Amino acid sequence: MIRLSSITIYPIKSLGPVSLEEAVVEPRGLRDDRRMMMVDPEGKFITQRQHAGLALFRVKPHAEGWELSHPDHGSCLVPREPSGGRLDVVVWKSDVSARLVDPTVDSWLSKATGLSVRLVAMDDESHRPCGEGEVSFADGYPVLLIGEASLAELNRRVGEGLSMRRFRTNLTTTGGNPHDEDAARWVRLPDAEFENVKPCGRCIVTTLDPDTGEGGVEPLQTLATYRKEGQSVNFGVNLVPTRLGTVRVGDLVNFER
Image (tube, rainbow, N blue to C red; front, side):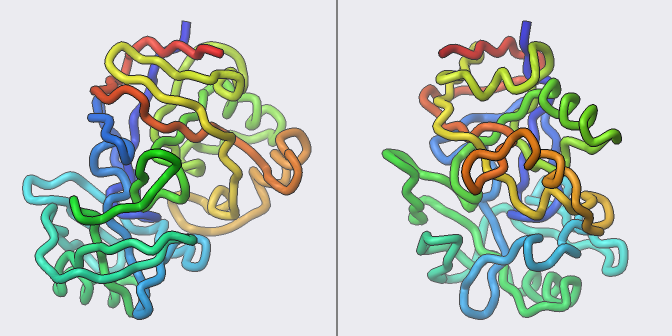
């Protein structure tokens, strides 16, 4: 029996996670997941790939939005609703019309990161196609799922206990065998359903300690020995919602071929 063991969103792309007991599934993914991101002066997205220090930022829910904190720069409140004008931004190969969130937040983030950045948000006028649907500011697909059994097998091979946080997954399951998720065409829960569209190719962010941002060689070094397909090292699966609803920790999860 396979169940949903955790739900995680990342309100601001490449910053800290927020754990939830339940989440609403929207066409772009879980509600509030990666609906905001930082961009440079040219409007290009910024991630831990280039700036590992972003791992130090923590995010907490707040009645008015999100509270950001950094060990050396205190905290800042990010309003849920953006108040600025529109800005054309780039995330990977996508051009997206976004909303500027708040100049005060931009100033705090620029000081805390040591970069010149602005925070942008998706609203109803923002569109980023993904197949026949849409996606948030996530790398490519609305939802990422990984089984705890898959991580346990990786850790057995690595010889240490790497955290699931390295993989920035949305949905984590418990039960079953390593990589059961790979073979599923459909992922069905009581109130929502997803299609498994492709394996998730992993990048250098997985080698960063999620607490400190310090880099290493694992888990990519070990994953490459048994999870490499062509030029991609895969771990986890990318999902697209096919039935919208609410997912809850403890939900029964059916992997169907």
